[in-house]
Amino acid sequence: NAGVTQTPKFQVLKTGQSMTLQCAQDMNHNSMYWYRQDPGMGLRLIYYSASEGTTDKGEVPNGYNVSRLNKREFSLRLESAAPSQTSVYFCASSEGGTGGTAFLFGSGTRLTVV
Amino acid sequence: AQTVTQSQPEMSVQEAETVTLSCTYDTSESDYYLFWYKQPPSRQMILVIRQEAYKQQNATENRFSVNFQKAAKSFSLKISDSQLGDAAMYFCAYRRWGNKLVFGAGTILRVKS
Image 1 (tube, rainbow over the protein chains, first blue to last red):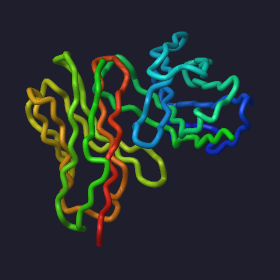
Image 2 (cartoon, each protein chain N blue to C red):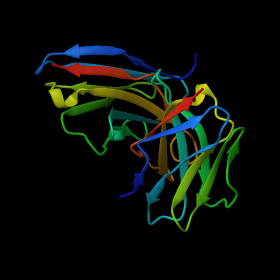
Image 3 (cartoon, chains in turn yellow, purple):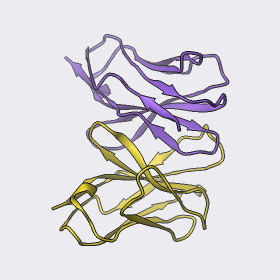
């Protein structure tokens, strides 16, 4: 099915461990995004990539790194996981440049850091 | 910076009745877009409806409609003939031309049978 694919769907990490969340879209979208969702705070932007080859910080970038591997793929890396990074993570994509186009979201990754 | 406020953490509605979810936003821009997203227990984010700020006519999608008041910076969602499947978290979101999507904190909607 066309859309945004995130892996894994669930993950438990120990404090200090590292991991990479993978995201791929097959909509030929220019822009991709990583959000985190926490209770009572909605979705907050971590990093985004307006186009292939560019990345920019969002609202809550500390503790994360990203890589726009190609037009399809945008990964999020936690170098040294902390309990404060326990959250649900969403990848999204959009055509970019046209404000009215909707974002298409992946199904999310529930990450627990113990 | 743009902010989006949803002042109702939870709402309840009886099946077949109508409910309105509130959203206000803060911006100095005149050209932007507003969205409502639905997140059911499956966690999937589903677009419900969108509104372009330069259009005065309120958007409608079947049982879902909005009341867009640009001067008041208000964007409420009305769900008519509520169904059990409407139970979900609803997020209001703002997007300026070519920019990222900013979300409110969300409103949990419960539908009673």
